[in-house]
Amino acid sequence: MISYGGKDYTVPAKAERVVITGALESMEDALLLDVKPVGAITVGGVFPPLFAGITDKAEGIGEKSQPNLETILKLKPDVILMSTKFPAETIEKMSKIAVTIPVSHLASDWEKNLNLLAELTGKQERAKEVLSKYKSDAEALKEKIGPALKDKKVLAIRVRAGSMFVYPQDVFFNPSVYEELGAAVPEIVKGAKAQQNLSLEKLSEINPDYLFVQFSEEENKDTPKVFEELKNNPIFQSMNAVKNGHLYTNLVDPLTQGGTAYSKIKFLEAVSQSSIVQVK
Image 1 (cartoon, rainbow, N blue to C red):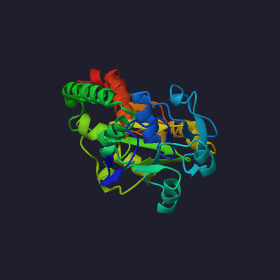
Image 2: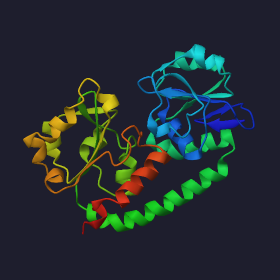
Image 3: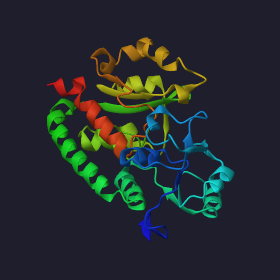
Image 4: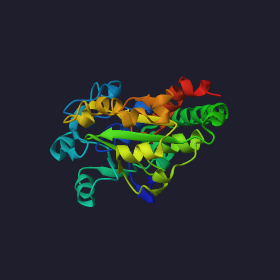
């Protein structure tokens, strides 16, 4: 019996056949814990290079929001990890195949998510080691970087489908930026209820001193040049972050979700090696 998200699930003592659908968060947790799912999400019909280490023997079970139930059924999973973003009827259909656990997409649940997969697969010790090291490293970096970010405007955005987006305080890389690094939370982030479109004019008005941008070609297939065009726009170039060399593009793999242990660790590592730590 495993408890997660206020519900109890009856699962094998050690789940050997795990299917991950919709929840890229769980894919990142699997990467960190070296869990190899029998079925996993594809992006554009293939497994992204990011997940090469855990998908060499996996079968593709559909895109992030389009799971193939027939393929999943054939894999005879012990447990299915889904995203809480899926509608109730999809979760219900999955539950008829095997025990199905909707995994939170909120960054604030990153520890619970990692511990869930660890408990399912017998990787609890590995999870403990990872969490302990991360917290120690994060504390040390905050001490080093805190003075540089004090009284500065810091923003993390994602460019997808040709537009810029900001996210709520507990989503994306925001907890890493505002909690772990100690930057002040801007009003636009405080007010965001979900993924929120951000115009260039509004970004210019905010005029961040530090700007983190995640841009993936896979998420901008119809507008592959949009970020290049943005960087060449005089309004964009006039912002403090750009003028002063504090535009950080894809510090980590652009497919990372931000609110997972893997994302947070990689982001922390990248920031610690960036020019930010040299700023006095």
